[in-house]
Amino acid sequence: MILIKKYFKQKQWEDTWLSFKDLFPADEAGKEKTYVREVQIDTDIEILFPDEYINIVSERLTLYNELSKIKEEEKLKEFEKNLEDRFGEIPPQGIELLNTLRLKWLASKFGLERLIIKQNKCIGYFISDQQSDFFQTPIFGHILNAVQSDSQSMSIKEKQTRNGLRLLFVVENVYSIEKLHQKLEAILIPLE
View 1 (cartoon, one colour):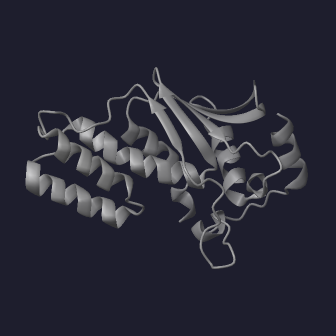
View 2 (cartoon, one colour):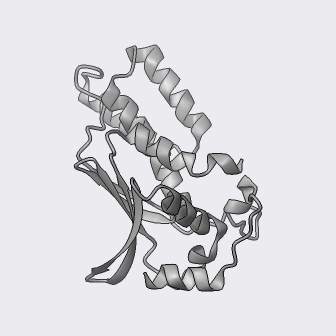
View 3 (cartoon, helix red, strand yellow):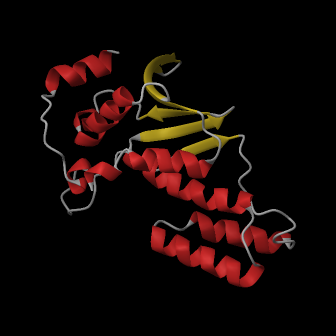
């Protein structure tokens, strides 16, 4: 609660909408400022290309490697189309794998370093540096507003870890990677 109280003390709320681009602070080069470089995801949801879909192990490994290098939506859609052209309709586990990349990109923008998605719940760990500028950004403020307006399925908590106090973003009723991504993306939609 310390970070949340600190945030509300330092921030005055306005009734005007923020434009989508204002949510993500730009660095000197005009790109979005990156607070999280890599998001770690741990899940009990099956995310893979099944043996029945791609039965040659070396081919699957090559595709996983290729997939790990994709950093933008357009390239991911191209990858998805190529998969369908070569192997047919992508099974649900494969779709969830592709959606995991989308979720990672979004989680990075949300300042989340780690997501644990298990037992129909997602626990996201905000960046560990409590002094980070991220906690003063409009996107963090908007996350707080979203949690406040949907406290039945989302919450923000503090947790003492061996590395110190961490701020967590908790989402309940998570039954798929796709639905979680949609829920998080919906936080931003009104601002476009």
